[in-house]
Image (tube, rainbow, N blue to C red; front, side, top):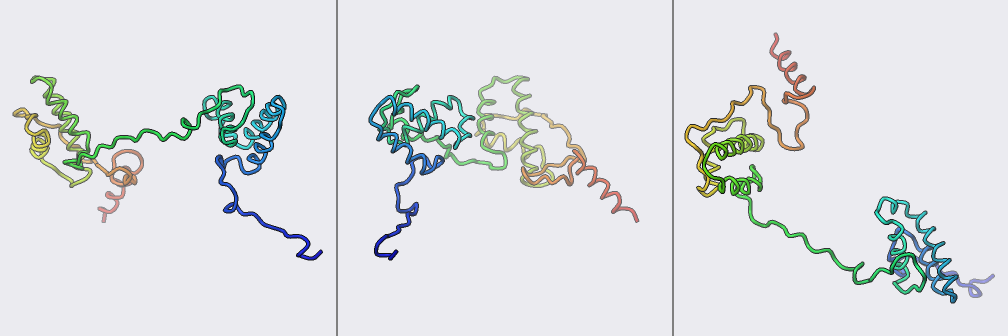
Length: 224
């Protein structure tokens, strides 16, 4: 047979209509188009149930969602372009609802005054500043200072004076929180180790096998 008698054309995905629900493939789209062409509504509805069954087998992950049966029927109407007249067990989804964009999440764009302490420190200081003077407020200041010292040691250096932490508390609070006279923080353990998040490889800590290995290594290295 000569080529002039028959022309074979190859179709590529770039030449055809973009799928509204790619997870179901182009074969399901063809099923839905044939479904819409059925003149009798009862037969059309019966065939719609069969197409939904096929969609369920092609997309088993839908079972992990709540009301997955309604999700499948929603997907059927979406594939059909919302132009499908059948007696579905669920109401037809509205295009303006399906295509609506979620509300943007407001972002806190206020700059962090001390990144090594984190953004929440200022919120905690605002809370402490609103507390009345007394033992409870002093205990809150002390707990915050211990936490800030730990964060300071993670991101800066090996030692830090208590006075430095106290000065940061008063500075970051704008003078609204005053550290009581004579306040002392608990002493740090000699083998305490502070590592940046994600960089604790088990060496130098006193927890688990990593700390034990490090202590043994130092002991062996010191022996002559």
